Length: 113
Length: 221
Image 1 (cartoon, rainbow over the protein chains, first blue to last red):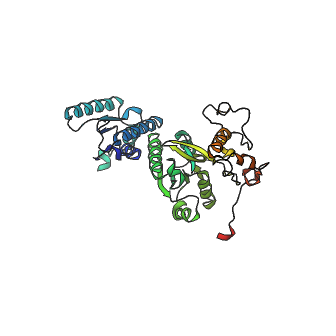
Image 2: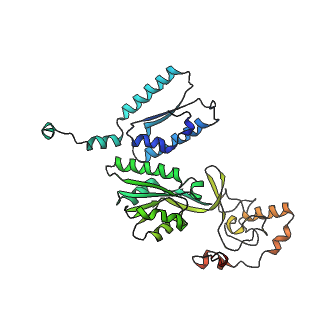
Image 3: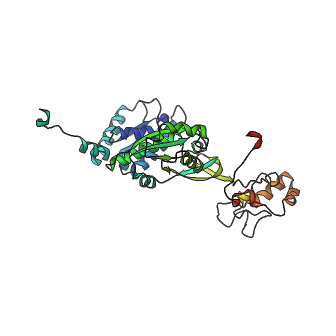
C-alpha cells in the first residue's frame, strides 16, 4: 500500500509482473483532487508508459490500468476491482506465468517414494 | 548535457540474444538528467528485459549497477571486481561512457542500450535541443550568445543564407534561422558592431574535422 500514487514508478509496476502478477490496477485519487497537486497525473503517465512496454514485449497490453477514486467510493472500488479482474481473466494468465507453470517439475508418486 | 534516446527494445533484445548473464550499467551523469540512462532507467530496462526473455522461454540474469560516471576511470574501476563473471555489459551511458568501459574491460563485449544524441539543453520535461557542437573555438561573445555553428543548419559564419524566410530555416519549418536569431539579439543588445568583428574565416582544425581530439592541460597534470 502506497500513500500516494505519485510514488509509483515504472520499475515498481514492472516488478509486480516479474513477481507473477497477471494484472495490476493502480488506484489514485480523483484527478484535480491530489493532495500533492499532481501525483495521480504523474502516476497515470507512468502507467501508460508501462502499458506500452508490456505491449512491446508481448506480455499483453490490457494487463495494467489506472483508476481514479475518492476514499468514500467503496462500492465503486468493488465495481472497478470486479471489472478489472474480469478483464484479466478474459486475457488469461501472463505469459510469464505460463512459462513458469510449464517449468514446474511435478513430483510423481513414484519419485516421492 | 550529453543527450540520448533509448534504443528500441527489439534492437536491445536482438543484441542480447547470445547472452544469458549480463551487467546493465547506468550512469549518474548527463544521461540521468535526460532520463535515458540513470538508476531508474536501469531498473526499468532490467525488468523489461527479464520479463521479455522469460516470456520467450530464454531467461536472462542481470546485475544492475549505476556508476557515478562512466567517463571517469575511478568509477569505471568499481566494476572490475565482478565484470569478468558476466558474458557482456549493456551500458545505457553516452557513447563516451560505453567506449570507456570497452577500453577498460577488453575481454568483455560492450553493448549500447541508447543512441547518443547531442550537447544540448532541457527545453521542458521530455524535450531537449542542441546548443553546442564543441568546435573548440567559441565566438559566442560576438554573436549575442547564440552559436552560428550549431544554430545555423549550414554552420555559416557571416549571416543568413537565401534559405532563411521570415526567420525560419529552409531545412525544417520547426527550425528557426540561427542567423536571424543572432542578428535580432545583437540589435536588442545594441551590439551590431560585433557582426563586423567575426573572423574572415573559421579555422576548423580545432573541431571534429581534425580527427579525434585530445585536451592536455599541463597545469593540471
